[in-house]
Length: 407
Picture 1 (cartoon, helix red, strand yellow):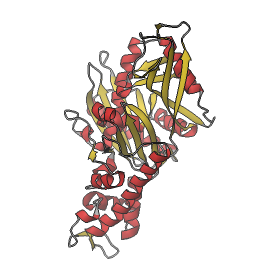
Picture 2 (spheres, rainbow, N blue to C red):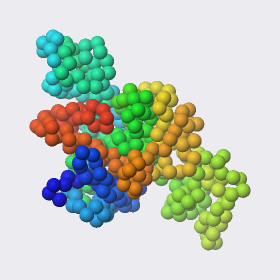
Picture 3 (cartoon, one colour):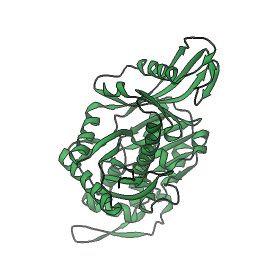
Picture 4 (spheres, rainbow, N blue to C red):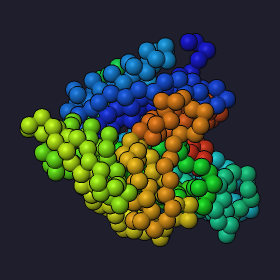
């Protein structure tokens, strides 16, 4: 174990906690993935600390057993309907005209971009991501260090989450016996697991369908342009089925997984399925189930599109929509997404060659957290001691403003 560096990603979700472990080398080798049911959160917010802690402990214990490793720290995903983003711009003049841009200049312009945003005391910033630099009049420069210039500007994407949400998720992980290495917005982590660089360059929308929230992240010209979450996801679909069929929530979940379809037109009218009833068993038209599911799936996608428009997002992204998360496994859901977003859609899975269990879209965020940790660890080794670091995270340039994050 002394020569091995094991990375752990934990996705603390509304219906489950998913844990993924990977070993660092030149590339990450995924070792194990496991999940545990969790009823301690509601739409990304901890409502039962003991239940959440126990779910984290069970998932991590299973990963440790499968991978035969001991785990001490974790990169932890954060989401929730109150996750918000804002894009900021700042420009600084270099102390001397026509000289090389240094890391110090990058730190100064990033700090100026962060300072330009007013963050309420009850919220915590977890990311300040540079979307691109401008060197004099040259836009979309990814790494300005070493270039000769007189002015340096940056466009920055800032993600904030309610402080109590951050602290309660961190507390659940710590009470499970782990330290928190870093807190990461879940849509950014999931994007690293399932998007290609070509899609991000072209422009693509990631839709991560969880149990309590659906996370969205829009990429344009290779950088993040918008991120957020809507409070409609898999749990509400299950709830609708439970009400429509008069069954319990666990029974409705089983029916959804076994017979669900997100598009009623794809189900033959004459197809019937068995469902529990007060008399023991009953038969229900499967198209009726699909109609219930489709109504909620359409609402979920329309809310996501509405949130994107409210944030200044453009029309349909040229690269289409990529669906991931456990909710994306519903048959025909990509077709519904295509109709709502008016562009092509595909199911996003972790790349071939990965651990079989981790290729399930339900583990996309956990896998992305491990990839994130790998890149952050590489940069930390090369750049020890900096208060503000520029990291090649998620194929983009990320500025991590440590002192501001502690405030």
